[in-house]
Length: 289
Image (tube, rainbow, N blue to C red; front, side, top):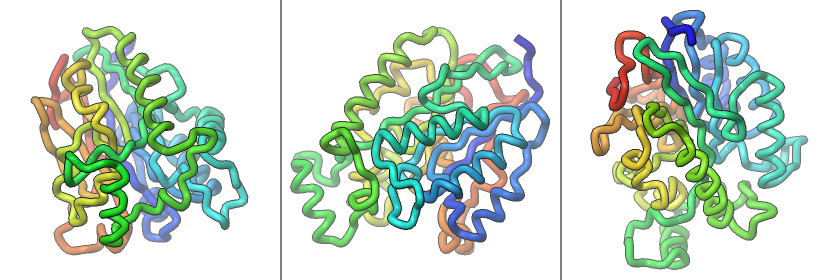
């Protein structure tokens, strides 16, 4: 395998329905011809917008790897594409494949880093309402408390789990399938995991509205960064771009977010994309950035 001089770059939450964010995507360029771009979800809501953004990026980067966010899975009433749930996800997978974009349903690509290969695994896991402000409360009680406080994710209205009976049931199925795939990989080869949501609860503790953590992941993945040889974990969703480390593993929140957020003074914008691994930094095992 030819070693690369390029980098693994990452970005998420492009939300290209906003004109200002569309301009950001239109201006994105790789640093070298070998650069890969990891897109950790929430490209947009409308099917045409998603297709435009992914096709634009696929034409520029050596490889684009996509993990779906919750917004891509919405079924907006104004979208000509009225597929719901699994059918909508499968449509997006077919779209990506037509563009050469890697999805969670494809073989995990191997990035030929200068210090050895790294497997890049895009994940689709959803959430199951287990990130609760009161760990002892039931899902029903936690949701009722969030509704009472007016903190309700729009997924409750636009993200349909069909044919699953609930979003948490869909999450359970996805976690089981993904865990089996990761377990079957070479345990000696480093991994970069790309998921819309963080694998652990800790990043959500800085949310202004802590109740929103209900829609931010699942406790079922809390030990994945320790069980598997994870060199870095890339996520978005929170719209709080930052770098943190848990148990020696870098976690990179790489969202752009909404214009009203990234236009605020002092907001750390993920533009250009965050460098996750590069020729100077890639190494076997734990890697920081």
